[in-house]
Image (tube, rainbow, N blue to C red; front, top):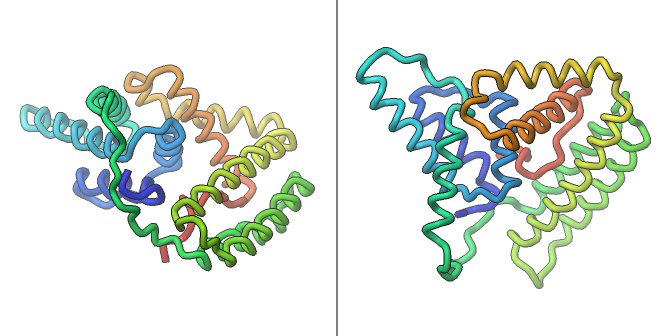
Length: 237
Protein backbone atom coordinates (compact mmCIF):
# COMPACT_ATOMS: atom_id res chain seq x y z
CA UNK A 1 0.00 0.00 0.00
CA UNK A 2 1.59 3.23 -1.15
CA UNK A 3 0.06 5.35 1.57
CA UNK A 4 -2.03 4.09 4.46
CA UNK A 5 -4.16 7.22 4.51
CA UNK A 6 -4.79 7.33 0.76
CA UNK A 7 -6.76 4.09 0.82
CA UNK A 8 -10.22 5.64 0.55
CA UNK A 9 -9.40 8.51 -1.79
CA UNK A 10 -7.44 6.41 -4.31
CA UNK A 11 -10.23 3.83 -4.52
CA UNK A 12 -12.79 6.59 -5.06
CA UNK A 13 -10.66 8.23 -7.74
CA UNK A 14 -10.02 4.96 -9.61
CA UNK A 15 -13.72 4.05 -9.61
CA UNK A 16 -14.69 7.49 -10.90
CA UNK A 17 -11.95 7.35 -13.54
CA UNK A 18 -13.03 3.96 -14.87
CA UNK A 19 -16.70 4.81 -14.79
CA UNK A 20 -16.01 7.87 -16.94
CA UNK A 21 -18.12 10.28 -14.93
CA UNK A 22 -18.02 11.85 -11.49
CA UNK A 23 -20.24 9.83 -9.18
CA UNK A 24 -20.09 10.46 -5.47
CA UNK A 25 -19.71 7.22 -3.58
CA UNK A 26 -22.75 6.20 -1.57
CA UNK A 27 -22.87 5.26 2.09
CA UNK A 28 -22.93 1.64 0.95
CA UNK A 29 -19.76 2.18 -1.11
CA UNK A 30 -17.91 3.72 1.84
CA UNK A 31 -19.03 0.87 4.08
CA UNK A 32 -17.66 -1.62 1.55
CA UNK A 33 -14.30 0.16 1.36
CA UNK A 34 -14.14 0.09 5.13
CA UNK A 35 -14.65 -3.68 5.22
CA UNK A 36 -11.81 -4.09 2.69
CA UNK A 37 -9.52 -1.88 4.75
CA UNK A 38 -10.36 -3.67 7.99
CA UNK A 39 -9.83 -7.06 6.31
CA UNK A 40 -6.32 -5.97 5.30
CA UNK A 41 -6.95 -6.11 1.56
CA UNK A 42 -4.10 -4.16 -0.06
CA UNK A 43 -4.89 -1.02 -2.01
CA UNK A 44 -3.17 -2.56 -5.02
CA UNK A 45 -5.61 -5.48 -4.98
CA UNK A 46 -8.63 -3.17 -4.80
CA UNK A 47 -7.41 -1.07 -7.71
CA UNK A 48 -6.64 -4.19 -9.76
CA UNK A 49 -10.09 -5.55 -8.99
CA UNK A 50 -11.79 -2.34 -10.10
CA UNK A 51 -9.81 -2.36 -13.34
CA UNK A 52 -10.60 -6.04 -13.96
CA UNK A 53 -14.31 -5.51 -13.32
CA UNK A 54 -14.50 -2.57 -15.71
CA UNK A 55 -12.38 -4.32 -18.36
CA UNK A 56 -14.87 -7.19 -18.29
CA UNK A 57 -17.82 -4.81 -18.32
CA UNK A 58 -16.45 -2.87 -21.30
CA UNK A 59 -15.78 -6.03 -23.32
CA UNK A 60 -19.37 -7.16 -22.75
CA UNK A 61 -20.75 -3.70 -23.46
CA UNK A 62 -19.34 -3.86 -26.99
CA UNK A 63 -21.51 -6.91 -27.68
CA UNK A 64 -24.72 -5.44 -26.37
CA UNK A 65 -26.32 -2.71 -24.34
CA UNK A 66 -25.70 -2.90 -20.58
CA UNK A 67 -26.79 -0.79 -17.66
CA UNK A 68 -24.29 1.75 -16.36
CA UNK A 69 -22.25 0.77 -13.30
CA UNK A 70 -23.63 2.83 -10.43
CA UNK A 71 -21.97 1.33 -7.38
CA UNK A 72 -18.59 0.14 -6.17
CA UNK A 73 -20.20 -3.06 -4.89
CA UNK A 74 -20.41 -4.18 -8.52
CA UNK A 75 -16.61 -4.65 -8.38
CA UNK A 76 -16.64 -6.61 -5.11
CA UNK A 77 -16.12 -10.09 -6.55
CA UNK A 78 -13.25 -8.92 -8.78
CA UNK A 79 -11.57 -7.22 -5.82
CA UNK A 80 -11.67 -10.41 -3.75
CA UNK A 81 -10.23 -12.38 -6.67
CA UNK A 82 -7.44 -9.82 -7.14
CA UNK A 83 -6.64 -9.96 -3.41
CA UNK A 84 -6.31 -13.75 -3.55
CA UNK A 85 -4.09 -13.58 -6.64
CA UNK A 86 -1.86 -10.98 -4.99
CA UNK A 87 -1.61 -13.08 -1.83
CA UNK A 88 -0.58 -16.15 -3.79
CA UNK A 89 1.94 -14.18 -5.85
CA UNK A 90 3.57 -12.69 -2.76
CA UNK A 91 3.69 -15.89 -0.72
CA UNK A 92 7.22 -16.50 0.52
CA UNK A 93 8.60 -13.17 -0.65
CA UNK A 94 10.33 -10.77 1.69
CA UNK A 95 8.60 -7.47 2.55
CA UNK A 96 9.67 -4.48 0.49
CA UNK A 97 12.00 -1.99 2.13
CA UNK A 98 10.81 1.02 0.19
CA UNK A 99 11.15 4.39 1.82
CA UNK A 100 8.30 5.83 3.82
CA UNK A 101 6.22 8.19 1.70
CA UNK A 102 4.89 11.48 2.99
CA UNK A 103 1.45 11.01 4.55
CA UNK A 104 0.33 14.62 4.17
CA UNK A 105 -1.53 14.36 7.46
CA UNK A 106 -0.04 17.27 9.37
CA UNK A 107 -0.40 17.29 13.14
CA UNK A 108 -2.48 20.47 13.23
CA UNK A 109 -4.98 19.12 10.71
CA UNK A 110 -5.38 15.96 12.78
CA UNK A 111 -5.92 18.02 15.93
CA UNK A 112 -8.55 20.18 14.22
CA UNK A 113 -10.35 17.08 12.94
CA UNK A 114 -10.49 15.61 16.44
CA UNK A 115 -11.67 18.88 18.00
CA UNK A 116 -14.41 19.28 15.38
CA UNK A 117 -15.62 15.74 16.10
CA UNK A 118 -15.58 16.48 19.83
CA UNK A 119 -17.71 19.61 19.33
CA UNK A 120 -20.24 17.63 17.28
CA UNK A 121 -20.45 15.00 20.01
CA UNK A 122 -21.05 17.72 22.61
CA UNK A 123 -24.27 18.59 20.77
CA UNK A 124 -25.54 15.01 20.72
CA UNK A 125 -29.15 14.35 21.70
CA UNK A 126 -28.58 10.64 22.43
CA UNK A 127 -26.24 8.63 24.67
CA UNK A 128 -25.09 11.86 26.28
CA UNK A 129 -22.66 10.29 28.76
CA UNK A 130 -20.91 8.18 26.11
CA UNK A 131 -20.71 11.11 23.69
CA UNK A 132 -19.33 13.42 26.39
CA UNK A 133 -16.70 10.88 27.43
CA UNK A 134 -15.68 10.35 23.78
CA UNK A 135 -15.48 14.11 23.21
CA UNK A 136 -13.20 14.48 26.20
CA UNK A 137 -10.89 11.73 24.96
CA UNK A 138 -10.77 13.29 21.48
CA UNK A 139 -9.60 16.58 22.96
CA UNK A 140 -6.85 14.74 24.82
CA UNK A 141 -5.78 13.14 21.54
CA UNK A 142 -5.82 16.55 19.83
CA UNK A 143 -3.39 17.82 22.45
CA UNK A 144 -1.17 14.80 21.83
CA UNK A 145 -1.32 15.41 18.08
CA UNK A 146 0.04 18.92 18.53
CA UNK A 147 3.02 17.52 20.43
CA UNK A 148 4.54 15.14 17.83
CA UNK A 149 7.02 12.55 19.00
CA UNK A 150 10.56 12.67 17.64
CA UNK A 151 11.20 8.95 18.04
CA UNK A 152 8.76 7.73 15.40
CA UNK A 153 7.58 8.63 11.89
CA UNK A 154 4.44 10.63 11.16
CA UNK A 155 2.88 7.58 9.52
CA UNK A 156 3.40 5.48 12.66
CA UNK A 157 1.94 8.26 14.80
CA UNK A 158 -1.14 8.48 12.62
CA UNK A 159 -1.63 4.71 12.57
CA UNK A 160 -1.45 4.75 16.38
CA UNK A 161 -4.12 7.47 16.48
CA UNK A 162 -6.26 5.47 14.06
CA UNK A 163 -6.16 2.41 16.30
CA UNK A 164 -7.36 4.46 19.27
CA UNK A 165 -10.08 6.10 17.18
CA UNK A 166 -11.26 2.69 15.98
CA UNK A 167 -11.73 1.59 19.60
CA UNK A 168 -13.52 4.84 20.48
CA UNK A 169 -15.87 4.43 17.50
CA UNK A 170 -16.69 0.86 18.46
CA UNK A 171 -17.54 1.91 22.02
CA UNK A 172 -19.59 4.85 20.72
CA UNK A 173 -21.53 2.64 18.30
CA UNK A 174 -22.30 0.23 21.13
CA UNK A 175 -23.68 3.07 23.27
CA UNK A 176 -25.74 4.50 20.42
CA UNK A 177 -27.15 1.07 19.54
CA UNK A 178 -28.16 0.52 23.16
CA UNK A 179 -29.85 3.92 23.35
CA UNK A 180 -31.54 4.00 19.93
CA UNK A 181 -35.18 2.93 19.57
CA UNK A 182 -35.75 -0.62 18.34
CA UNK A 183 -37.86 0.63 15.44
CA UNK A 184 -35.01 2.79 14.15
CA UNK A 185 -32.46 -0.05 14.28
CA UNK A 186 -34.84 -2.40 12.45
CA UNK A 187 -35.48 0.25 9.80
CA UNK A 188 -31.74 0.77 9.27
CA UNK A 189 -31.17 -2.96 8.80
CA UNK A 190 -34.04 -3.13 6.32
CA UNK A 191 -32.57 -0.17 4.46
CA UNK A 192 -29.18 -1.89 4.32
CA UNK A 193 -30.77 -5.09 3.00
CA UNK A 194 -32.53 -3.17 0.21
CA UNK A 195 -29.35 -1.34 -0.79
CA UNK A 196 -27.35 -4.58 -0.87
CA UNK A 197 -29.95 -6.63 -2.75
CA UNK A 198 -28.57 -5.95 -6.27
CA UNK A 199 -25.06 -7.06 -5.22
CA UNK A 200 -25.75 -10.23 -3.21
CA UNK A 201 -24.58 -12.48 -6.01
CA UNK A 202 -21.21 -10.70 -6.04
CA UNK A 203 -20.45 -11.01 -2.32
CA UNK A 204 -19.89 -13.87 0.06
CA UNK A 205 -22.12 -14.29 3.12
CA UNK A 206 -19.46 -13.00 5.51
CA UNK A 207 -18.76 -9.89 3.44
CA UNK A 208 -22.49 -9.21 3.11
CA UNK A 209 -22.92 -9.26 6.89
CA UNK A 210 -19.88 -7.01 7.37
CA UNK A 211 -21.04 -4.44 4.83
CA UNK A 212 -24.59 -4.49 6.17
CA UNK A 213 -23.23 -3.87 9.68
CA UNK A 214 -20.99 -1.00 8.53
CA UNK A 215 -23.81 0.52 6.51
CA UNK A 216 -26.25 0.43 9.44
CA UNK A 217 -23.64 2.01 11.73
CA UNK A 218 -22.98 4.83 9.29
CA UNK A 219 -26.70 5.49 8.87
CA UNK A 220 -27.12 5.60 12.65
CA UNK A 221 -24.52 8.36 12.85
CA UNK A 222 -26.19 10.23 9.99
CA UNK A 223 -29.57 9.96 11.71
CA UNK A 224 -28.23 11.61 14.86
CA UNK A 225 -25.90 14.05 13.01
CA UNK A 226 -22.81 12.57 14.65
CA UNK A 227 -19.31 12.50 13.08
CA UNK A 228 -17.02 9.72 12.02
CA UNK A 229 -13.86 9.74 14.12
CA UNK A 230 -11.51 7.92 11.77
CA UNK A 231 -8.76 9.93 10.08
CA UNK A 232 -10.01 8.51 6.79
CA UNK A 233 -12.85 11.02 7.12
CA UNK A 234 -10.64 14.00 7.81
CA UNK A 235 -11.08 16.92 5.45
CA UNK A 236 -8.55 16.98 2.58
CA UNK A 237 -8.62 20.80 2.52
